[in-house]
Image (tube, rainbow, N blue to C red; front, side, top):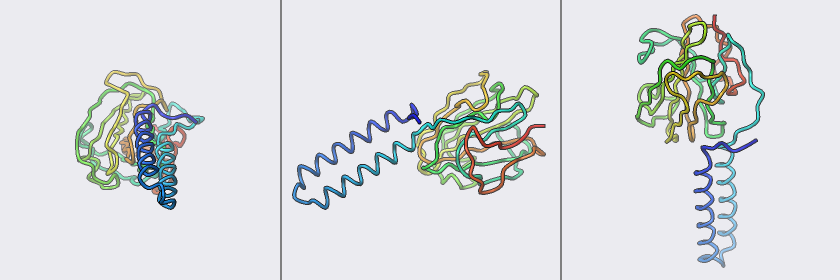
Length: 219
C-alpha cells in the first residue's frame, strides 16, 4: 500500500498541527499528565485517520470490453431510471455509489474509450446522499464513449465534508478502464448514467470496490 499524491499536503499540514499542539501542551500543561496523554492519543488517532483516507492499496483490477467497472469504493445507494438533464437530456439508468470518509477515495474509469465531454460545476456541499446533491453540489461530469459507440456518463459529487474535487481528464483524452480519473477528499459520491435496459450486476446497499466490482454489462 502507498499514499496517494493528493494526500501529501494534507498529511504535512496535519503533522505540523500535531507537532504544535503537542508542543504547547507539553510546555503549558506539563503537570497535567491526563491532559498530555489525552492529546497524545488524540494526535495519534488523527494522524491514522488522515493517513488511511489517502491510502492507495495494491489491487488486481477487473477488466473487460463489455464490462462497466465500479469507479469508486463505497456503498450502492441508488439504482433507478431517471432523467439526465445535463448531457443526454433523456431517461437513463442511474447507479450511485456513496463514499464514506473511511473508503478509498480514488476514482477510476469504469470503461475504456474517448472523453467526449467534461465540465466542472462549482456548487453547494449538501450531504452526498441527498438527491439534490447530483444537481446542486460541486461536481464534475465526464462522458466517455466506448468503442462500440455507447456513451457512459459518470459524475464526481462533493459531499458535506468534501471540499475539493480533483480530476485528471479532459475532452479528447483516450482513457483506459480502471486507470485513475480523479480523487475526492473527505466523503463524497459518484453517479453513473447508463442506457436504459443495461444489465446491472449490483444491488442496493451492496459494498463495492473501485476497479474491481463489475457494475454492469454493455450490450
